[in-house]
Length: 364
Image (cartoon, rainbow, N blue to C red; front, top):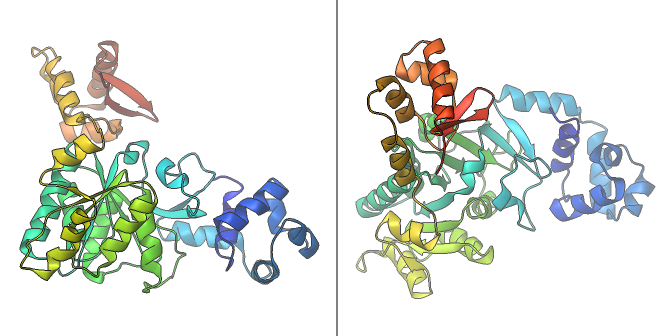
């Protein structure tokens, strides 16, 4: 654990200290450990106004940072701070990027290839099918699907990604220790194993209407572009689309039924300049995402067909790192066989080590 992490956690809990004020404090003190212990005068010199200064001094007297870090661990989560190399690079470029993220699961560099898929909770069968199929197609091309775990379109998007064997991130409007909605508990568990649950809200924070606009800016901030699969004219999905446009992200929309109010918001977006989408390739082309599925097929085709062991192991590998123990489990081969075969595949230029006993396809 980074020795500074508890202080990042502490500052994130102080009311009225956001990214802008925290940057000023960090610039002045050089590190947050010194800032946490600073006097009122020093904090004033750092540019901290009276109210956040008072809030900090009140909170730090009663907060045990090590206990707070342990609470996060007990929730099965970890934190990634704005200065952590693991912090999502797209999100980190925003001026209002969260101070830290609570993460249950894993964030990978490959998640920078992401598309947000959002829409109404009260979706039609058409909207649900569109969100599911497009998300499944994108995930099959190694694109991470970002959504918000809500019923309706969000749920369909996450399931499409999972069914494709791809990655998906659910951005929450509550603490990472709270499942909302409750009926998506099993889905949340699957997402944490095949991606991550992500939030900026502290443990114990219940979902509230003021949380969701903040949640929505993270969905768009993590994404190269945002797809509105179906939405009425007044919908939280349109707030996400607006955030995406403000952040310089591409906005996409699935054309809706002109006779159904559930599709009017998406149609309005298209009228206002959103890119009309009828298949995943429309987004891949617009975002200039090269199909990694095609790259994978090209690599696999280079295998000498006379060696079924190498072929089977290569079938397991993708652009995303896979631990050797998981390769053993999937293939059923002994560990020694898998290890020696991976070494041969590295020498052939077909696979590469990603560190920590993890391997992936060598991209060509």
